[in-house]
Length: 223
Image (cartoon, rainbow, N blue to C red):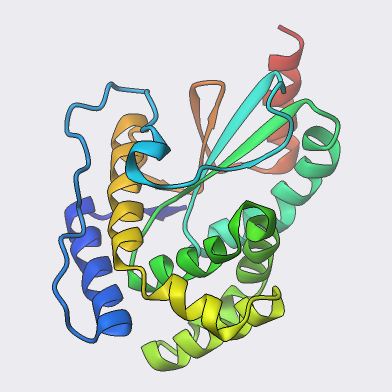
């Protein structure tokens, strides 16, 4: 599980990274207007931050599973392949579980990937996320911001986005600030200390195998 460093450090690093790539040096207040009075356990209202909540599954599903994940977290990539994939087939597509993806930002690269994933809207988000998680090692390994930005653009094009669309998304500095502020508020509300972390009907769970997760879900369905 990836551990969370102090959020203010992440926020400042993210803002600096976004500014380098998008505006080549403009200053940004990454923490935005995140509320410091968030009720413990209560999620931040995405609409208030100008952020779209990414949801997969029936709105009437008896179980809501919130996944806190980072696009640069190797454990999150493994979770998406070995846990989320069968979860989707067995529980989401059968109407038992609704999955909500919540971004966590360890670094500027994670923010860039998030902005690319969200560029195609809700319809393309999950497919983009699959591409980014599956190819995580290939687009993160260089460590060079210019190379990484190019690789992320390739992923966006594979998902059907054109250069103008990607450019517009990646130059949206206000959205970058909003995403960081929203993430900070949600992490504080659910006391997130590492990724992936799961909130299942309001209860926090750590990263686990699909077999163990099935036991948790089946027990809740039997309640």
